[in-house]
Image (cartoon, rainbow, N blue to C red; front, side, top):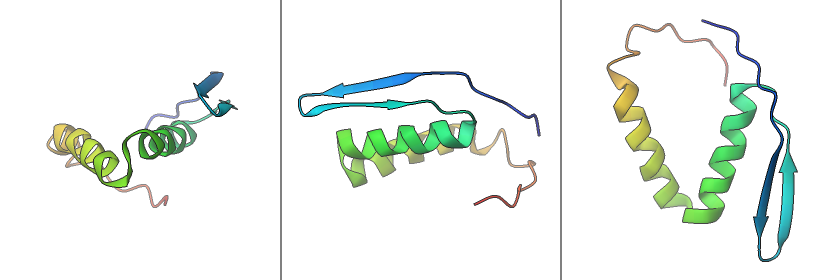
Length: 70
């Protein structure tokens, strides 16, 4: 596996206010993205969206070893 670091500042705005995020890893970015998907689409629509992404990559990464990270 390749080590990836992220240097980003993300500001999310909605009518009730805003939030700022500074993810440093793909895992942190994914948590932010999933949280925003659930807030924007609802839980079930977010699950369906994520399932579509996993289907796209399922065959490409079937040989990848699990990392043991949760």
